[in-house]
Amino acid sequence: MSTPTQSPIQIRRKLIAGNWKMNKTAADGAALTKEIVEQVGRETAVDTVVCPPFTALESVRHVLEGQAVKLGAQNMHAEKNGAFTGEISAEMLRAHYVTHVILGHSERRQYFGETDALVNKKVLAALANELRPILCVGETLAEREGGKTLEVVKTQTEAALAGVKPEQITSVIIAYEPVWAIGTGKVATTAQAQEVHAFIRSLLTALYGAALAQKVRILYGGSMKPANAPELLAQPDIDGGLIGGASLEAKSFVDLVKAAMAAS
Ligand code: 13P
Image (cartoon, rainbow, N blue to C red):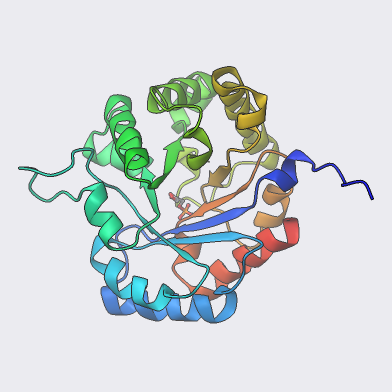
């Protein structure tokens, strides 16, 4: 019997990641995670990641034991250790069984002055420590209105990936998050999102070749909700979502995981 050829969509398992941002105490995070795993804890057709604040990593990790849902952090420092008051290293995250780390989120860039060069250092440090970076890129409203979307996304993506080796690139997850769509209820149209996702994949193709580029997951983030997810997730280059607001309640987050299952 001949093996059916896989379409590019099937090569990439969909991924739904919840970015809780600065929300949930250790106890609240454990309670939310319990509700999530009760419904999708053994689901393996879709990769699911929850990214609590640092202070909830330990309590959430206990709930995730033996479940398919993975643990992510929202940031980390690029250095191994040392005099960096208030910071957390990759090694420290690993000790909490963290597997993913969000890097270069626009809120880090905007409020904490993170530059492309710093994000690049963090990406390299995460990979060196076997953490999967969820690398965020995206334009502001002014940049979109100025016709600079693709230029901004190109600069951010290429800078963040400098020095990432071909054998490492499939461990990287890219999240396209138009800044104007984050927490605003203004979701990018499917056409706007797909255009940028396809563009990011073309950048990856130029850097790493088509075979590897086809394996990299590119998530959409910015007011993604159960109502708009099916259409976004049906796009050929949208491989999942990085979810803010809708990840703070079990029902909406689980519904997003189910939408990704349906689109798989
Ligand atoms: P919202 O889903 O709340 O718009 O946030 C998106 C985001 O920033 C995820 O990282």
